[in-house]
Length: 101
Image (tube, rainbow, N blue to C red; front, side, top):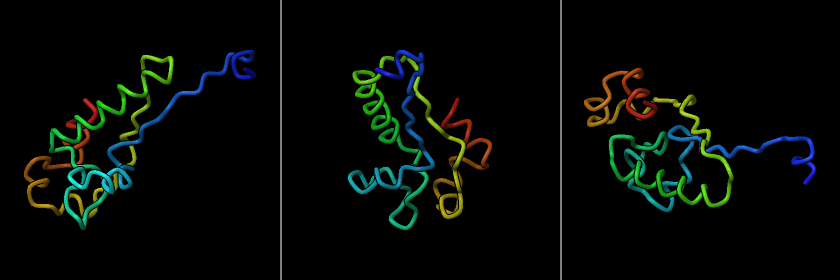
């Protein structure tokens, strides 16, 4: 109520793909490999299906049309060493474009 009086809006953030390690505990296919648990594997359609499902649920809770998705804190490290991910993404720039654009 207090935030409403002050016209403060609380926006939810789903900080992916960089901070999705906990998601892989329930859905290990979201990880590029068991040794590479962050970021989420953006080369799999399943990853986008899970994100879409979460956003659908969030629309029921939050009154906004937009959500903050992060995307800026991807520590590639081991992720870029995964062979199929290297082929799929080539560079950090194309990785970011694949996910965010």
